[in-house]
Length: 325
Image (cartoon, rainbow, N blue to C red; front, side):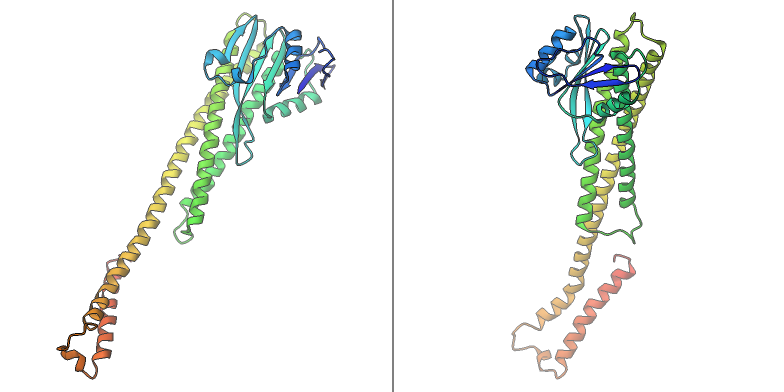
């Protein structure tokens, strides 16, 4: 789908040209979502650029993601998608600055795009350019990453409280433990994806700052780039801290599971020891030898029962005294 954004007096108006319609020369932002070959050609003819393919966008080399070609700056970043669901994923998005026009190529729906589109549709600065739209998009992406990390941190704290809650309130059920492990795994996966996105955004901002040397950008926009670099650096550090915390919580959860298993095994071991003497007594008097004087006793049967009960009670209280139970 091809969306063209044309600035008016105080708004950024969105249009969707047909296959036969040309693109307006005053367009400052051209958004290509899952574009067709015809849409690629339309954009290439207007902006004088080569639109990268999906395979080109998925390259991981920095030289394939950040480069200059025919005066246009090509910048591919990894953005988060569906982070509010149980199946978050990342997608490659290419930003192309050609002149004062921005072209974006994407194959998914990162939330910052809809946020910026709605924001500029309400109000935009006079003399809006593609560089200004790019700054808005990058700022929205960084804010989105910060929100995701903040929510992930709160969820990890909640999981930590569930693990380290008092023993009297802890419910040692395998189902609860499996849910906690699943939650930890999901937060770890989400955090790693956010960190991957932040690293790519940081490289993009650094490339953009270096590539615009000598270009007459406003002082405010240069300050925004520096602020974004600091924000990305701090968020990357926070993502690393959160990853370490998730690793600690995971180790703690596995330790709790091991303790629960050891307690269960200890209980079975103690029960086996407690029942061993009564079993020995019952085995002795269950033998069928003829010469066993106790078999002729009038009170032999109740005596054997009392011996078995005593043989079970004495080890039990001995273990309680030593606090093994």
